Image (cartoon, rainbow, N blue to C red; front, side):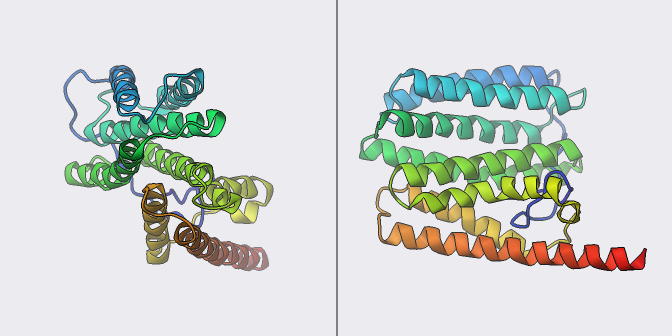
Length: 268
């Protein structure tokens, strides 16, 4: 998982910017066309999830999927540059479709108490794993074609954050961990808000292998928690360890930002 180091988008658990951009795309595939294809893909995924027992066709899952995909459509429509959407962004959009499908499942489970059968539970875990694995593909394509852009980086980062948040909620809904696990997905958003309130925390962060490693650990841990074979107390211990590591990473970067702000203030 990668997070931007821009003041408005950063969190200490994120890595330095990986700017997935507009590599050579199929001719004529604009952002609008890609979003329509994504909507069709989401519909196909919903049908597959219902057939697989992951979703029950209820207003809860349908409304959640519509609302969150609508948010993706709005964000892309506002921020995407004109021209071809680009293969890296198409891959990120695929990850967005999978993430929105998982959000529908999470909403269904949280609001109605619905639980899929064993096969359906494994399908959820496999979808989560696929979304995380695809995170490396869009970046590779962007670097391969040298078409990295700020929009691609931000798009990728926001889908990363949304996926982690959804999987954190799923871990709590499935009783794999206590409410504290919500902090795994919520800490990045909390840091963004903190940056609005405390300007010293809103600056960019330097590249960090630690930050990259912590991001990978969060994603892998949450996928493991989604697997039916990982149950308490092992699942709870994994969540505690992941959250502790994430908190440590945030603390290191918060202290670094505060020290830098003090040095800059003394220099002026």
